[in-house]
Image (cartoon, rainbow, N blue to C red; front, side, top):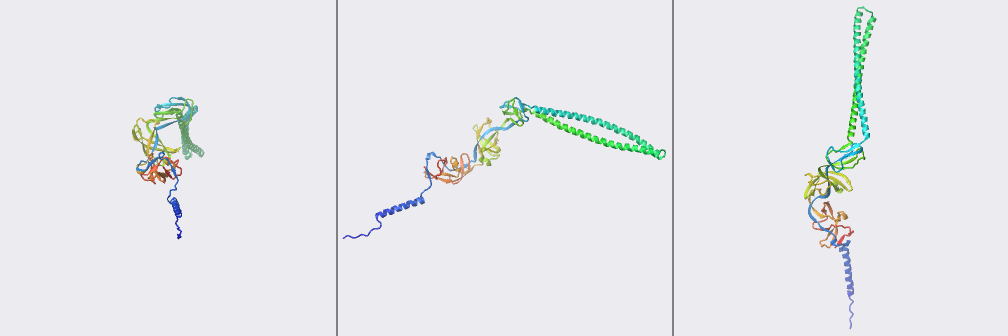
Amino acid sequence: MDRVLPKRFWTSQRIAIAVGGIAVIGLLAYNFIWADHRSKLNVEKDKITVSTVSTGSFDDFIAVTGVVQPLKTIRLDAIAGGYVTDKLVEGGTMVKAGDVLLRLENQNLRLNFLQSETEANRLVNDLQNTRQRLRVERYTQQKTLSDLDFQLDQARDAFERQSRLFKEKAIPEQDYLTAKRAYDRLVEQRKIEVESQKYQEENSKLQIRQLEETLSRTQKNVALWQQTLNNLVVKAPVSGLLSSMDVEVGSNINQGQNIGQIDDLNGFKMRVGIDEHYISRIFAGLKGSFEFNGKNHELQITRVYPEVRNGRFEVDMIFPKGAPEGIKRGQSTPIQLELGKASKATLLPLGGFFSDTGGNWVYVVDPSGKRASKRSITLGRKNPEYFEVLSGLQPGEQVITSSYENFGDNEVLEF
């Protein structure tokens, strides 16, 4: 007799369904909780550059290029304008101080000189004539005063005689008063004459002084015009190399116009162009060095030109121990310019990644070597070989330092 068996709940079908559901749930949980959802990009490892972060001495310097220039360059500017009548020396010639380089002509200057000279001669004649006239007038005044003194003496004698006779009642009072009035009149007349001659003397001195001052100024003008005429002959102010002379016979030169320059070859300096990024760190006294003829030579900044052109500014550097033998004007050479003392730091080699990230992040290779992940970092100083790492990287880690241009915004690179 058949027996009815109870129906089982966990049939093979239900077990299969449960197992499948658990697997799906586990897969979903793994995908949401543990799976890596970062964007990825497959790259070929042999087409990228991987560098190792290290610890070492960070030499704070930059590589710049300097051009050899004369220690002093004297500009030749036309002191007086005119047209060129004679050009005696060409550019590229050694000259000595005082050598004639150009001769100019300016008819207006010559006319002004002649007019000033004529005026000075006229004033000289006027001064001589005035002195002669005043001398004659002084003699006339002395004669007038002498005649007046003679008349005064006669009037005094007559008055004294009439006074005695009047006291003795020998003459009438009218005769006495007449003699007295004549004497008093001459006394007053002499006083007036003395004051008049004193005024004329002072006035004469003033006229002569004014004429002398006017003559002195005019003579100074003549000397200036003469000096200006002399400047029509352009001479070398110092000895050296006349590196340029940009004028030709017949050309017109304006006052103040640059007509050339002379290089003093007794010494040299370096004119160095530097990126404006470093302008706040550059000052007089900083040192540098360069290699020439197999030897290392020191340099030192003596002057900073703060004007920035096309993203660069310039400095002058001298040779503290003297310019190396054989160096030539116009020669260019790479220079290692020190910005600070060497210090221990975490170092990351330079690379094209910086232009894409600004140094804010890099791709760091996993220890497995199969992938690289994006990581934020902080960089400090830079020299021609390394960046100084301030945070985000440890010595021994590997970083992709080549360009990130083709990586887009992917967070993980897989090799």
